[in-house]
Image (cartoon, rainbow, N blue to C red; front, side, top):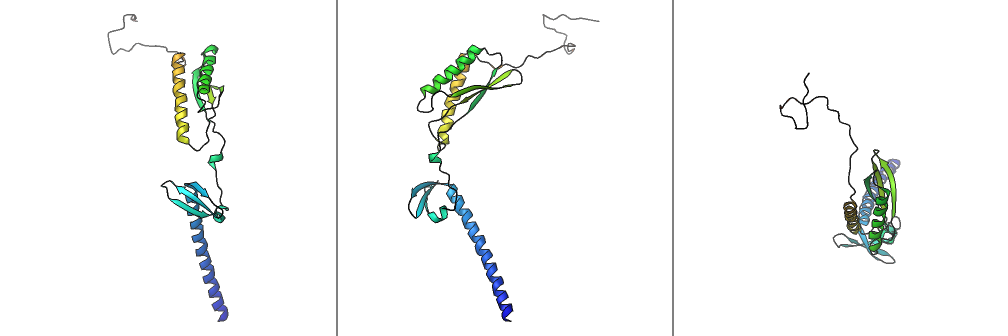
Amino acid sequence: VNAFRERRALALTLNDTKTAVNKLHRMLNFLVAIIILMVVEEMNILTTVFLRFDNLKITIPNAVLATKAINNFYRSPDMGDAVEFLIHIATPAEKIALIKHRINSFVDNKKEHWYPSPFIVLKDHEQLNMVRMAIWPTHRMNFQDMGERFIRRSLLIEELIKIFKDLDIQYRLMPLDINVRAVPTTSDRLPPSWTSFTN
């Protein structure tokens, strides 16, 4: 009887332990979700205060945070960017040099946005009639403000469009060979430059 009671007590204890571990696992998942969606407001010796998107301040013990991965975007290095575009393969080398010069001038004049002298390369050729160019500027900010990144990128693309119009850089398809074997017979009228042949 004693062995039966001890066995029953052990089974109940193991069941309670499983329940407790499952609840702890759910609590830790919830805590990690909270940590991911917040901004660090204040760090103290024993606790860290997070500011949620709706301005709710949440205090979490540092002992809990010590077991979690923390990504600190504020200390990230300045952000690089990439803008790619295609030009026709027949574009003269002088125009390509002018494109590079104008892009460099634009970026160098925006010292508050980018570091000077972005990396500009002819990256690849595509479909036998296009050359892919790439601009790799470096922002004077880190990954914290993505909205500002898109505003700056938009200004660069607007300047590219202006450069293309000024230098008459146009989109051209590959030439196609067209062979006309027969004239449609749906109309008796032909263009004035055509002559009709009868068999």
